[in-house]
Image (cartoon, rainbow, N blue to C red; front, side):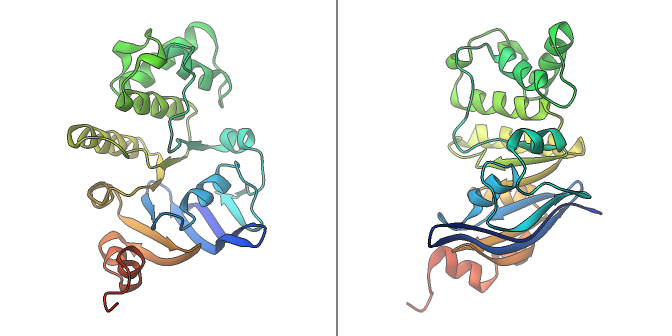
Amino acid sequence: MSELLTINGLTKRFGGLTAVNAVSFSVAQGEVVGLLGPNGSGKTTVMNMISGHLPPTGGTIALGDQMISGLAPNRIALKGIGRTFQLVRGLPSLTVAENVIASLAFGRRKLWGEAARKEALQRLDEVGLAHRADQSAQDLTYIDQKRMELARALAAEPEVLLLDEWLAGLNPTELKTGIELIRSIQTRGVTVLMVEHVMDAIRALCGRCVVMNAGRKIADGPTATALSDREVITAYLGDVHA
């Protein structure tokens, strides 16, 4: 598989705090890769730099042969990076369909009118939400808000989809549904980089994991190997000899 997303020496400093320290890894086309680590390890900061919500202090980010590090979020989105957030960022005054249409209107194809609505309904159907298309977004349950956000992200036709704790807060039944949705995204050829704390989901979805601690990358490899790494176990659980 060819590398689609390449991160080299990525660094972010906030004053005297180095939140991300010279992190390098790549994601091949079609992979689902977990970006793991304890709270405060720098995972979301990496996602924010990839999507353009934070400029890197150092290092580079490339999508295929295009350098995207430091570009504005809208330009990065148009180049093929999609994103969900830890807290769902819907437009509550709009309907569910209108939330997706907003993505289509400003996306790579810039669809409007009936073409945009038809596409929005298709995207909502893919995530099991077409039946609520004309309801107010503010009336959705938590899992359905997440479905809507996922449909909106997919409407932008990303090559790489960044999922930032998309499965957090779901009950066991919802979690199973969420895992199947992410699997379906992969089968359509979308590459996924996901920050997640639900290890059952990581084992089910990710063939490979990159693990961070205190801003550094401490492991990168097949999921079972990365999760059994001694430094990774120590990062999550503390020194076993303490």
